[in-house]
Structure formats: C-alpha cells, structure tokens
Image (cartoon, rainbow, N blue to C red; front, side, top):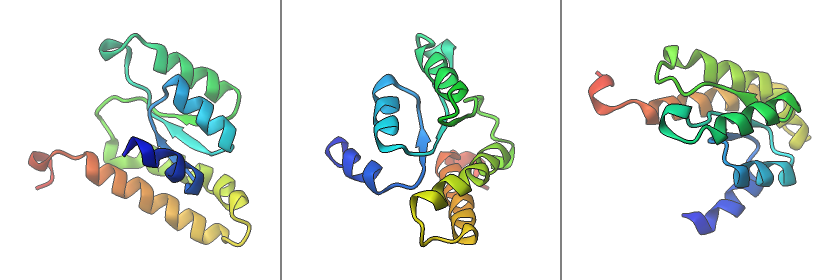
Length: 121
C-alpha cells in the first residue's frame, strides 16, 4: 500500500488523515485540500497536533480533534462541505453540487469505517 500512496494522493481531490510532517509536505506539493485529524498528545509526542495547527493557521487545511467522539460525524461532514469549493477548483468540470455530494459521501464512508463492529448495531 505505501507504494500506491503517491498515485492515490495525485488522484485525490481531498485528503482526510493524520498530520505527520511528511504528509504535510506531500499535501503542500500537490496543493491538496485536507482535513487533518492529528494524533492526540497523550498517544504521541504531540508533533502532529503542532504540525496541524501550524498548517491550519496558514489556511492550508481544516483541523479536527481526534477525540473518539465523532458526534455522528457532524464535524467531519462539515469540514468536507467547507472544503467542497476547493475540491471544485481542482477539477474545473466538477460542479459545486457534485463536489458537495462527494464530500459528504467521503465523510460518511470514513466515519462508517471507523465505527467498531460493537457500535454498529
């Protein structure tokens, strides 16, 4: 899978993921809109949180906390909706409506994938 990441990022209209330094360099090089969910300081050195905050202050992404309380995905869906215009700008033929629908779908798929089997019932 790691060998496929450059191709996946090059094809992507939106990135949702962690905020490691290498990831941010790749996002910047590709000018890719992003929703960053940094590892919290209690499970890491805290560098991802600092990276995401700095990148966010530069207006390059939206940052969501990794608090295991997705509130039904409202935060992630809203972040994707907020980035829909940036996604449309990357693909001029895509309409705002299609970009919005894609953002919501990406957020829902991501949230569904993160729900443990015990919580899905």
